[in-house]
Length: 172
Ligand SMILES: [Zn+2]
Ligand SMILES: [Zn+2]
Image 1 (cartoon, rainbow, N blue to C red):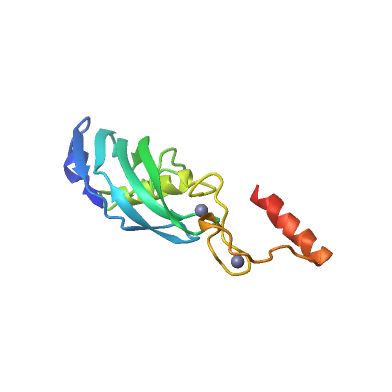
Image 2 (cartoon, helix red, strand yellow):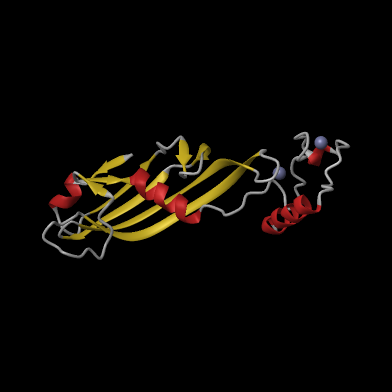
């Protein structure tokens, strides 16, 4: 979603409020691609503080489906985004930019990019469908939350057992 800043940039101190809908249907983290199950409108407040500098307030919520790290079942993970930041149009004469300039392209504000960057920043390190999810059987792939499958998952070889311990510890 791009918001045109043409009118806003014509006059200093002008303000605009907008509600726009989500364009992002799937969110790509670079590690995987996840469907956006639900999203509220995006509330955007813009103020042209002068010289093509913007004060931007953006608020929205969404629900993204991410598989549980242990059993791979989809979990609806809620995100609440509330951002307030200064964004400037890139000025080639300025050596250093103290404000974000990557979000304005051709006098349009790239709302999707702001949201994507924020989602990446707040992306949870771990997703579990429930705190004590038992995961999948390492032998047959059965969902152990639905009961035991009777497989023998004990590793007899001591060298393999050591590796299994490493994985167990890494999981905690
Ligand atoms: Zn799970
Ligand atoms: Zn099994």
